[in-house]
Length: 53
Image (tube, rainbow, N blue to C red; front, top):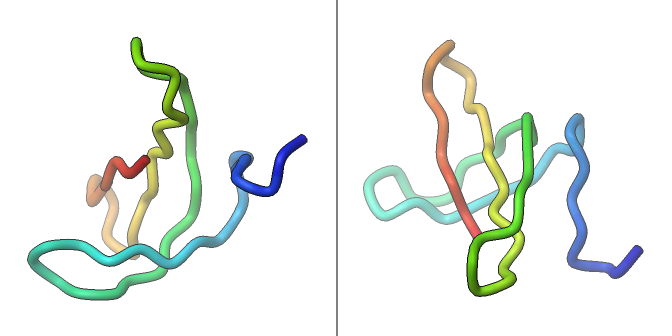
């Protein structure tokens, strides 16, 4: 596993365009058609998700 791999259950910090830096829980990952790992992050409110690569 490379250092850039994320697994469900990991806690990560991301910079969002509207809320600045936030921490969240990785709930899923997948590769897009270009080969980037897309990480689905859930923030503190239910239904509040963010996708980052």
